Image (tube, rainbow, N blue to C red; front, side):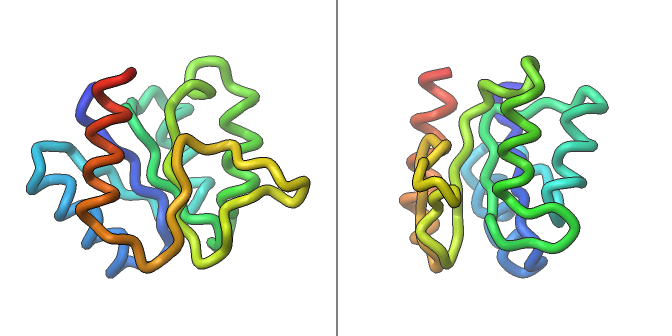
Length: 121
């Protein structure tokens, strides 16, 4: 789905705010409260043009989600935007994301990045 954006964030207010901003800009925001919900959605055939991913979450954190994403050929190439109060790097120092923003993120910058990634994919 070209305009579907999977928003993986455990804080409901943040998740809902991002989804509302995406919806207002013509995207379809798809909510997931943690990495496992996101992985289940994608493994069930759900589509996403971009994933907006928090790192610190219960059940399955963002780093674990990204490792699982890279192991699945159908979803491995979906660009990911990391949002975190951390710096977004994996424990080995790599940044396996199309973009990394520290919270609080400027919503217009986030939307512009989503637009660019959707256009480039």
